[in-house]
Image (cartoon, rainbow over all chains, first blue to last red; front, side, top):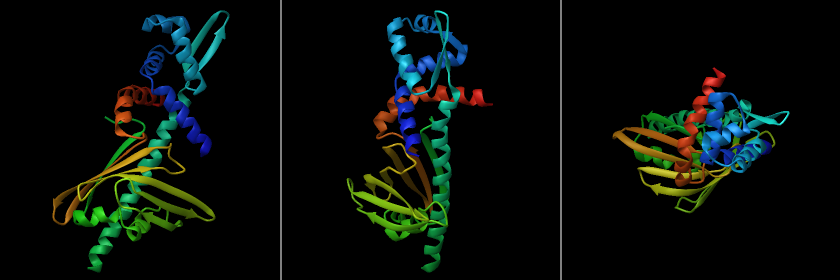
Length: 112
Length: 142
């Protein structure tokens, strides 16, 4: 659970930046892109893109494939599932709590 | 707009708004409804029901104790209750906001909103970018 938490935090931090979310969006459209193509798409420096990609890579959100001099980047979809798991966990959790709350208030009503 | 770290649930509860609201701040009531499974016990419920006050709910499954704690951010009787929620399953700093609306004197509409961010400002800042990612994930998985 702790590892899960740590990973969620890293993934969340990585996605907190609008430029990095745009990179993910772009990769979603394109599938796999060269680092230079990503830089060109956002008209930011290669250096700037590299920094963002490093953060995304550390979070496990993108994968890098080196082919000769070309560095290809693609989204690692499995890493994006964790936010989903959080959502589903609490969806279930609160749904059941609210059912229990309904039962509780019914019992209160009957006691009166 | 929903995001992966944000969820909203609505329930119509056949009880007066006062009863529903107070249940969230009453240790005896919380013991009844806050545990996730029948098999679990809730040995500790401490509630300091004031803004800035903290609560501690310890849930126990077998020998494993799971402390849930947080701090009350809004106590607006009987309209709104907001508290931070930190549990072994939550990233640090999530916020639960509950709105209570009286449909009639004996019926309450409860809306629970849970965001995985320390506060609303931060949430709003992050909101926009999430939708695309969720859509992307959905199309990828389908």
